[in-house]
Image (tube, rainbow, N blue to C red):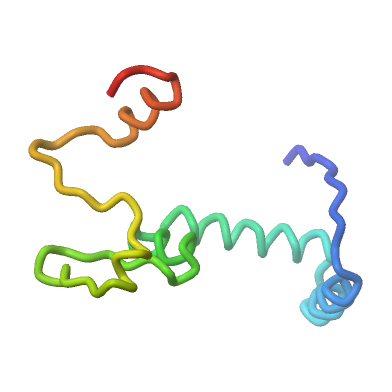
Length: 104
């Protein structure tokens, strides 16, 4: 497998921990770090939309349906982009239009 070199700036305490764990698992630091990165990428690729929203929102985002929607003033201040569309649309395509400066 071809490899590429990368320079990382890493906390010395973290590197020491990585070294200790890798040594305990009878592997190199490089193999250990590669395995962790591969596992995390696989985990991210397999997560549900709700899991992804929670991860990216640091737990500060709520997913609500019509039955759950009864916000108080504090919740209203936290809401971002909540609306009901009259008909289905491709939100990704609409965002691309906005990025290109097209009318939506």
